[in-house]
Length: 182
Length: 231
Image 1: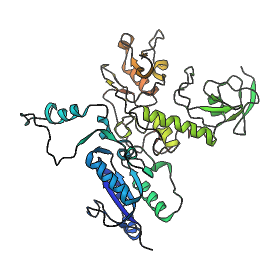
Image 2: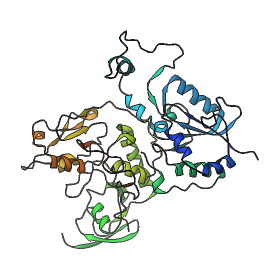
Image 3: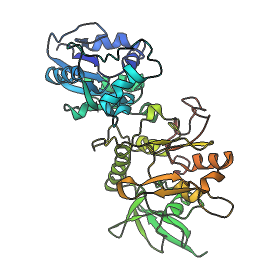
Image 4: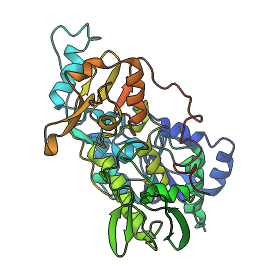
């Protein structure tokens, strides 16, 4: 039997959850024995090249590109996991929810205390740029998500235990210390 | 009052003085029933419903119901725990609880209940209500995003004449707990500390003090809520 295939991505996240994946330390050697990585920042494969078993999503959806990537993950992955607070509930980017997008952009590019050089009051307007959504959406409000691993970042032990349980089919052990929201 | 009576919680034989509220009686017998709006020394009000138990087929709040002779209480069952978990989830989605950015994280009772019931994700959609932060007091910050309207600060923090320094404002969906405009002027650093301690979440914070304890040494980092009770 061939190894299960894993893909990962970071949407509106800070890559902290990916850092936490690396935080499994030397178990990463066991991990590459157990699985094969496809599209992921870990191996820098940019597009899906085969069907994937487990897709791991970091970050929520704050713009149109995030939504597109998330939908392509749902299409190409059998199982999707929301990894971390941002994927689960929007996280810190979602603190802008409730504030109109226009106000957010003006604060960032025109009125903010650190804005100095934008005298012409130019707002980002290139067609290539993804559009900001009206608010930040948790991943499970866009596509179906199968499993959720909370934490900011999720503890490396939680990620490891969850992946191993999923791959081997053994029951998941969840000690109190590994499930945290911060 | 002092008559000793027998009752059962989930089939376990327990004893307490008659008139004791179920939460307290359970605690005396080493059984933890989760609470949020209830706190020792303050008259219980059964607001948050987290302490719901089933007695004689009816759901009752155990913080406001006294034990009686021969009472059969169902507490730690699948149905009741599922109900309690759904209340925790509702509280999470109805406010803006950004745990990673909260000074109370690790010491927060709502978060601790999320851990207790292993809430991986709330089953309800997030509301993301738009709420404000009042930092006008020289001693404390009142963050409405995190307030769960438990009324603990209103009940616990009073001036020397017994008048509460916090009060409800508005009604229904607009209800919020605020520092009373007049009486709030009597706020002292000591009362601010007491208010922060009374708040089960991170809605009341003492100014110029935050993230005082490192991760790993906070109240609920290693021990679940209620582990001081359970035998």
